[in-house]
Length: 485
Image (cartoon, rainbow, N blue to C red; front, side, top):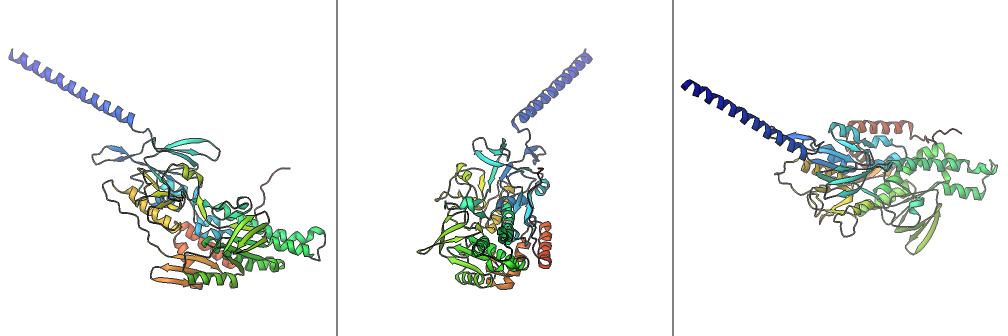
């Protein structure tokens, strides 16, 4: 009897154990199914301290300019699932865009492709425009070059879409001027300059007389070889320097019969206004006396026609016939930036952010670079500022939530500009107020060489400079693509 009771008791315990195990397993299956239902299907995961796995925050970066590219380069990909959306698949080293416009360096030498960095970060890249941001659903709407649309979700959003050239609504600028903002602008400018030189070379033969030049022909050739730069900031000054370098070397050697017809004008209110007065005057003297640029100060363009530019200088109105006009007179926001629905600055030109670069009134949305301005802390719209903001924000996004974030502070490393003729100006350097001449030119080149984001680009820049020094600039013009007739 006692033995029977013991066996029954053991059977009951065994049965209860089995039921408890089955119930526990059912609870685990239920928890797992709940997790699967609530977590995004493609959400990346990261290990937690208890050994389980949690989704990594999805950081979506808009743009591949200085600030955005720096965030991608410095962010901790082990803590964040990174996605980059931009219609441009590379970072353009804009401070050297003018050098690439005349063949001193190759455009590819100042472009850093985004794909290798995306692959190393195990990130994603979409070559598209962002047309809208849904802050409630936390997703952005993207549009491809072909016009197709799709949506990308985010947990944290970084807006670094840059600026565009500012035409100030002056009639004819959009239709007739060249610009110097994107990689393709440098290619278009170089081809245009070479096209004008070749056109001027054959123009006298169009009437069948190869010996004599009529006054009308001389006037037309001078028009073709009149180059106008609008804007006296670093881009305009460096482009004028590079252009006159080219015209005084390759231009004189290979188009010697045209050298007396060449004219270069600069129309601007002032020159290098962020530099002190002494350096501004030094730059103006060098451009005028050494480079042969006719600098028109206090000048405002009134209208641009296909071959004529109307300018007001003081009370004087003038019209100049030109063959090439390039616009370097300022920048303005892209129209879609205002459509994002963010708080803007007083002028409505930039997204307003706080000291941590977070958009005012928004959570987990940041804006950096030229498209943003910090409340009560104005900074110039330069690559140096954007680069430091990118470094700062990458660090913020890589920190743990409980870590206190310090406000962003900009530390100037100095300013510089190339003037042409192996001459440059540098100002506000650490431990040095100013530097001019050939020594400044060497400092300018070394600084930009050092600021490249890869050894690949540093190597390519070095070989470009050596090639130009030994063999001169490349004057190859790529013609139209082949097309059967």
